[in-house]
Image (cartoon, rainbow, N blue to C red; front, side, top):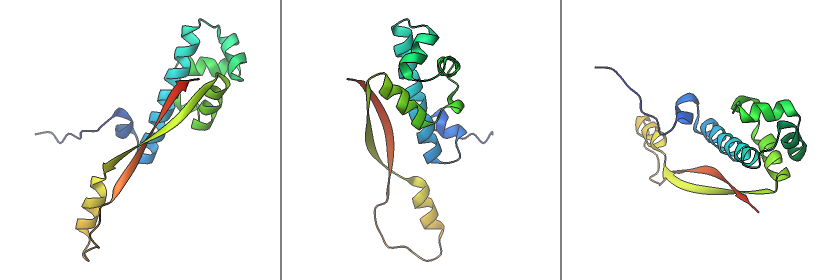
Amino acid sequence: MKNTKVFASVWDAISDTTEQAANLRARAELIHKIAGIVKGNQWTQVEAARRCGVTQPRINDLLRARISRFSLDALVNMASALGLRLTVESIDKPQPEVAAKASARKAPRKEGKRERIATRARVASQ
């Protein structure tokens, strides 16, 4: 029988940490939203670049969803230039790896509920 791992998302599968996965997820959502605005308005890449305050090759990278070429900071700046407002939503979920690590320790830890806060960026038009 094969040993198969199951992940909550593709970002969890390709990331080493939950923090990296959250960063990739936020960048992907922003790229998707900005690209949707560019395509929806039928802007040329030159026009989109002017409106976003970047170069045309950067818009090309964005439209091709080359996520590794963008920092979260750069995408937030582009979204802001388009008049978008970003909000952060926190979702409390139990963190199973913390419980597994605690049970593997020899000395018992104080009982307490530990939670991980996952963040997800939401983009809204103003």
